[in-house]
Image 1 (cartoon, rainbow, N blue to C red):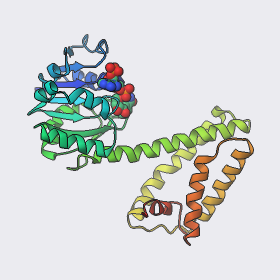
Image 2 (tube, rainbow, N blue to C red):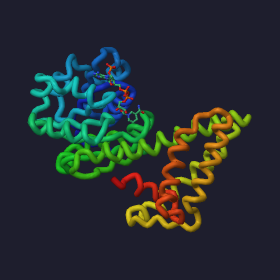
Image 3 (cartoon, rainbow, N blue to C red):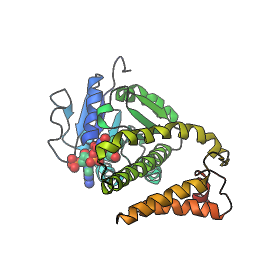
Image 4 (cartoon, rainbow, N blue to C red):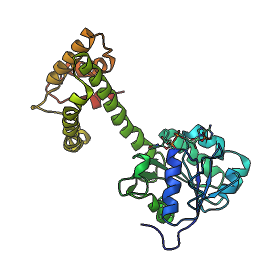
Length: 294
Ligand code: NDP
C-alpha cells in the first residue's frame, strides 16, 4: 500500500536488486533518486522518472530515507563511510538492505549512531521479480519508532514485510539461517542430480519426484519447531538410526560412482555422533542440539 503523498526516497546501488527496489518506489509514486558506483545502470529508471544523482552525497541529500543495496557491507562502507556522505546522512535515515552478517549489521548501527545517522537494517528474502508485488518477503530490524516512521515508504516494496525487533542484527540473522536452508538444499539437489546422472537418470526424469521430496519439508518445519524449542527430540516413527542407515547408502552409491560424498558424509557423521551419545531413538533434529553444544 503506498502513501497519499509519497515521500522522496534515495536508492544507492543499481544492481539487479537495487534497480528492482527503485522501480517499485517509482511505481508507487515516490520521487526516487538513484546513484550507482558505475555510471549507466540507471537506464530505464530515468526514463520512468528517476532522478540520477551525480554523487552519493547528492543522492542522500534529496530524501529523508536512503536505501542501500549493494553486494556486501564492504561495498556499502566504501560508499557511505566518506565525509561528504556522512555529512549528508546526518539526521536522516539509512536502511541497509544489503545482505551480510548480523555482526556487520550491528557494527554499522554503532557507526551510524556515532555519526548521528538513524539506522535500520533489513534483508530481502525473494528474487527481483517479486519486488513491488504481493510475493516479496522483506525482513527489518532496528529501532521500532524509526521503522514505523518509514514503513509507508517501505510498503512500496510490497509483499510481506516483517519487523523483527530492536536488535539490528536480527534481520541478517534470519537471512543467514534461511540461506543456510537454501544452499544446503541446493547442494543436496546438485548432488542428487550427479548421482542420478551416474545411474542413467536425467534431471528431467528426476525433477517431478524431487518436487515431491521438497514438498515433504514444509510440514516437517512446522511440526518440529515447537519440539526443537522445547528440546524434545524423541521420534519413534523416524529414529536417527534409520536416517544414518539411509545416508550410508547414499555415501556408498556416490563413492562407487567416484562422486564426492563429503556433504552427506558430514551429515551422516553428525547422526552417528548422536547415536554414539545414546540418543538413537531420537529423530534427526537431535543434531541441532549436538551442533550447539559448545
Ligand atoms: P550484486 O550483489 O551483484 O550487487 C551489485 C551492486 O553492488 C551494484 O550496485 C554494484 O555497483 C555494487 N558494488 C559491488 N562492489 C562495489 C564496491 N566495491 N563499491 C561500491 N559498489 C559496489 O547484485 P544485486 O543487486 O542482485 O544484489 C544486491 C544485494 O541484494 C546483495 O546483497 C544480494 O545478496 C541481495 N539480494 C539479491 C537478490 C536478487 O535476486 N538479486 C535476492 C535477495 C537479496 P557497480 O554496478 O558499480 O559494480
